Image (cartoon, rainbow, N blue to C red; front, side, top):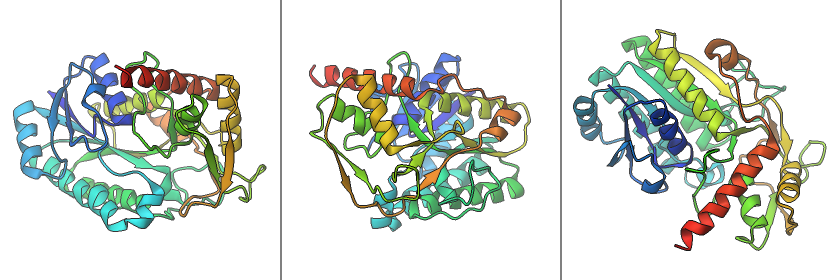
Length: 329
């Protein structure tokens, strides 16, 4: 039996593939590599270049490879881009997820782990945010993910599909063993941008808005190390395999850092100063959002190992240096 990982060549997906293969799992990666990289995939995994919305392809893989679980990462993830291109996001994140869920149901797959997002909450009324907070996404990206959560709930009720939807907060850092990391060009993730700037890959960077109702005027986010996030998916999969009920859970640490705090940390850890400008707010950005991780810790026994902003930044910097060496080969 094996696990199908969609988007397994991407940032988070590639970490999950390494996590699974490290545990001795048989893994099939389905990715069109429009943004991911084949070289980031663990060599033990089987790679299939294709679209997760291709129902005939997915059904064939499930039958031929003995797929008993799907971990679904494939999709688009930029809040600002989703505001400009909403229909593309509803196609990539919602319509194709619907096709994948239907194929899972008709092919007899019983376990489904979904990459959701804290963007389903919008700007919360209180902190930290628990899973029963009002769902008020402020972008097509957040709405496209919430729609998939709703489809999973309905498919579970009608067909017995058991699922875990993990609502990520801000993912950062890189594999502690240096095997993969965030490699996307023109990333919008703050830690990566700041690390690139510290290493001279960018001439400078911008803060998008410094007039938010926060202590220093910049947005506050809960940053989770990507290795801890991969482990959370592993815990969710074990929970479902053991007969556990479907679950929706936050993935974060329960502490927030402002944009300025993150930039200052990158400067301190790297030992390098760099220019930072201030621009206008981006559409769809809530002022602050911090997770309550109580549910995932209680229900799944998840315990983070890398809950330290300095450590997150250090691993991200090491990965950026490794990417520089790779690009020079």
